[in-house]
Length: 155
Figure 1 (cartoon, one colour):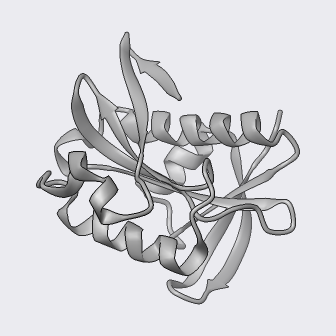
Figure 2 (cartoon, helix red, strand yellow; figure 1 turned 60 degrees about the horizontal axis):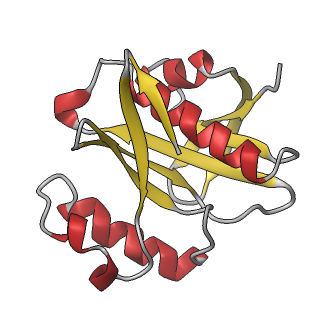
């Protein structure tokens, strides 16, 4: 799955289930911490493509990460995304979010797509607003405490 940003393509590269299967990312300095965390996450929630995690690549460089936090539960999924430090404030996070939405809807058009952010107007909440998410309100996340929950609004 890929989309363009000013004629530059962003492509999602799947993070595979086991560390040994991720040789392309294993020694990449921007993946050191997140790769092991992703493998550990799979051990807790399962590995069911396309409801997995990805690195985002543009022009042959890793520019961010993307994730669908497990397979659908009650017709809902939660997405997460991020841009690596050297690539922030370039519209990449907004595009990564859009790619996750499109991938999810291509896989299951009836799915409800949610995301969570810190309870403040910040980069992440702006990314969601640009991608047609609406704020549902505050929820308590077992790992993150009180957060805002957003849902994609199919226009």
